Length: 204
Image 1 (cartoon, rainbow, N blue to C red):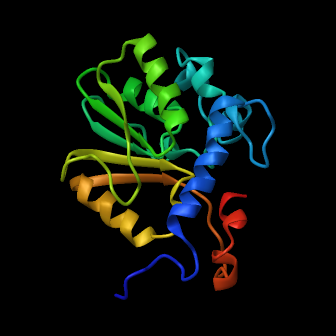
Image 2: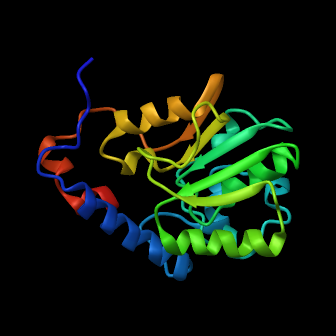
């Protein structure tokens, strides 16, 4: 199979900087109003159960900016080890930590400092020792080979131009027989190469 590469003419670092700028704003000003849904209203749209959100700080919920519900594929089991790719302020990581319990472990990974700062602040206040947040990219994560029983992601892979690289990394992290539970944007026709080179279309 031919390798999927970053689209020609698209600078990956420029794209990452633009995405970080967008989600930095979601972290700092979650009620500003964006071209996408956020917060508790979004959680309701994508059918998060009320009990999942019980005990999760509003400061985490308000910066939720996913595209779907990875838990609709299946709930996590006590004792499982989970990686949350593109965790943002951590709503799915907190839900995962509750579902797997103290016998499990959850690592939330994001590339935006402000989102990670927010997630870590609330993790510290909630004192959940089996939950941690780390800096990383989808194509390069600080997680060992075969560490995870489950990898989840919510509205993140669509922002990654090197999708094959991201999927290879997910496969590397998962144990044999592990699960990938993904919620994301899908299109039903090929995106033109000219569109792939426009940063504003990736971020907006």
